[in-house]
Amino acid sequence: MSFKLGTFDTTDIVGFKAILNEWPMLPVELSLDDLPAGDGALYYTSRMGSTEWTFNLELTGDNLADVLAKADIVSMALNPDLHNLLPFTPNAMEPWVWQGVLAGPIDWKRDSVIWFSDRGVSRLLGTATISTPNPYGYAAGDPSVLSVPGAMTLVQTGNTSYYPTVTFRGVLSSTQRFIVGGTEVSGPLTADQTLVLDFENLDFYVMTTATGFKVRNIADRFTAFSRLVGTDTTTVNVSVSAGTFTQAIGRVPSRRI
Image 1 (spheres, one colour):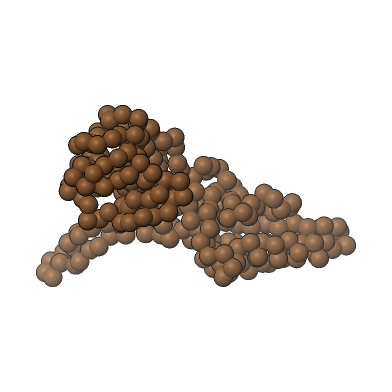
Image 2 (image 1 turned 30 degrees about the vertical axis):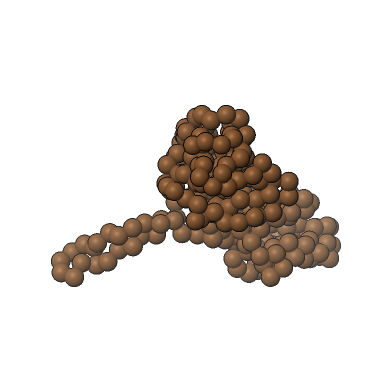
């Protein structure tokens, strides 16, 4: 299994193989305290830690100069000082995308058999570990669009919970409210603005629709709040207390781990 990191695709280099050793899943970290007397421990909570993906690398060239030149290309593409976190996808997992970075050095070793340049081929072997601090891979499905108040269906394709983003266009006065599930936000909102409720990043604001420029944060405009979360296909009611309802769009950043 090869991989993509940013614009770098291991399959683009002729003679390069990247084989995944293990598939990381459910990197659970527990918070426990040993009991002060007796056996056992107190359980407090569990969380998902970061994940690491280790690939065996095999790099083959026509001669020594060719294989070393290819090794330089790999080093440039994976150098974290140049690129930092980049979109990362094991090639069998499209369209899922993680955010990854090289987690350690690549120690290239020459193949003990296929190395001699006079035989027309040289090979280097190594390992590369990609760390994904956020263990979740994301994939965006088709948005759910309403042009009138009603039930919005949010469809996910991952294997864990998700927090959707809901955007709303319409006209609201300062006393009128937009309602999605258990969350209510008061205006004002003008016809050329969009209300954005990002429940994953807890980022709530009004932006200019044409430019995407953020006008203001609306944390002070909540009259009720319940973080919208789903674990499967979810239906949520969307409406306004009064005012004009032009369009509401629900987007699901499906997650897998």
